[in-house]
Amino acid sequence: MAEQSVRWGILATGGIAAAFAADLVDLPDAEIVAVASRSQESAQAFAERFGVTRAYGDWEPLAADPDIDVVYVATPHTAHRAAAGMCLTAGRNVLCEKAFTLNLRQAEELVALAKERDRFLMEAMWMYCNPLVRRLKALVTDGAIGEVRTVQADFGLAGPFPPAHRLRNPALGGGALLDLGVYPVSFAQLLLGEPDEVAARAVLSDEGVDLQTGALLSWESGALASVHCSIVGGTGVTASVTGSRGRIDIPSGFFHPDRFVLHRDGRDPEEFTADPADGPRTTLRHEAEEVMRALRAGEKESPLVPLDGSLAVMRTLDAIRERTGVRYPGEARGEAVATVTG
Image 1 (tube, rainbow, N blue to C red):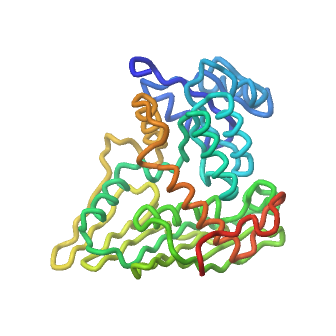
Image 2: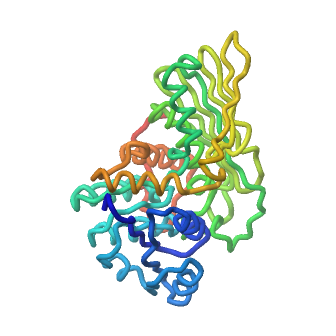
Image 3: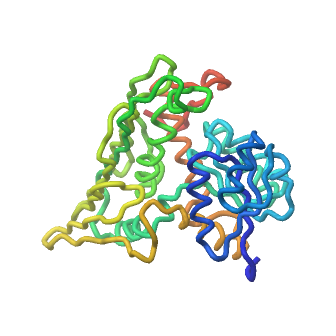
């Protein structure tokens, strides 16, 4: 694999799959060899759009295709366990969209299956692979702002979304938390690790999904994180990290920023901007490049998006759902009970 293109399969044909495929097309060492959908017509249209030679009207033949090195699973969260599990069982490596799964139990099953089959598995948390986010993380780790005291992050869309929209549909894992809130939670845990306590409140729709959710995460160190997500109000999509000797502000688009500002006590503010060579801020190519790097190195998971970290985020999301009363069809009572306290 080190001397040839990495051959991708795309499972599902929605908007995020199209965005990912567009970035893959621009990578000289990546090749999309097949796409699969539940509809042959949809798969064929996607294949024609991106110059893919094989279009499958079912997931199984894509999972079984021996010419595929890795499958990108781009279904709604409710299908991640089934789709990624099918691919891993068939011997394919997998990059699976976030939220990683619907709940912690499903995530643990996927991780166990990947280890059993000796396959690569990674959650598609593209924020963790973003060069500017990695720079921010390195600054915090190196003590640029001292000991982290607070993290604040928000992600809200104005809507309104009609009841038939996927974001309002419990059968598709709808609501703000799994679709948007996963970013603020993941940002906080990138910097502070898994919280020791979780408190949360939410406003639920008539369908039982969260229209907006706020959570307070806390650590034994004394650090706190305030995270918020919404599908009924557009927010600034900002983030701020405050430490004992300064802070870092991301003024917009914190999960794919084009700049952030470092404020150190006693110094002038420093602005860090994205390198134009890294591509537009919306690019997904960084996570694709990380997958291909890991595969060529023979790694079974990425150090940038480790599986333990994805499981920890799922534990927090489960804890928030348990505290706000959001349960999806097919989940048993208590399924989303988290192991953290609070």
